[in-house]
Image (cartoon, rainbow, N blue to C red; front, side):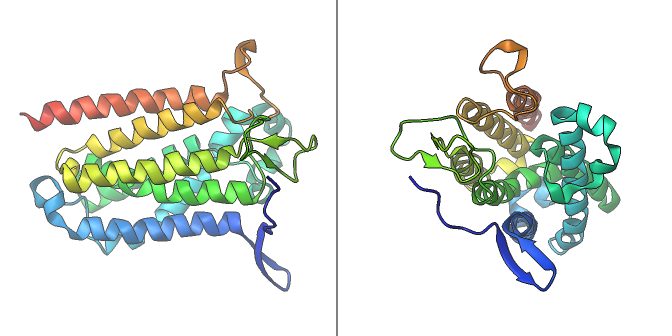
Length: 271
């Protein structure tokens, strides 16, 4: 399949350029906050009818979220994906406009921001992590669509009929649209699973459960897609395996933490 003719630049006003990638980050935060406000407004969804904070406060948290995502995502990329380069070019660390963000780092960043914000508000921190798990899939979906528009993070060569020839591929081969795979799994499917858990099975009444479901769902989805996605060129496959990637390695702690949270939430809910 030919790559769709989509300009990575959404619009320009004089020298001011706005890219779809930036809009994906902004849209993920704003739409996530809007959906989160509806969850917070339904006190009956939460343990003891007490959400981590009131609905209106999530718009204050949106600012904290942007800082946490950008700082965490950038630091994660520098440390785990290209440390030798940035060790010799430290001034480039702040050049986020040139690309280079890590989801795993962004996740740590936004969790830290949410923890601090919730503590300031006097709420239950595990419930606030559940809130992140419930709304995080929105940003994941938009981010992966933006990756596709940028023709980046594509997959290995394939003979399947939906293989895409990306304009940034020097080999010009049909490749797995791994960004779309991730958008479907991490974004759409995981959102549906979490939504069923929160609204059909009262998962938010068990602090830590939704965060655990999100962690397990994300980690399994990411590890699966990594088998089709090309590794970062500066890293390649790890340990000479021909299949192990940094994305898989960084997803394993999330998987373990998700399982631990699910077990903890189920056990404590019986007490």
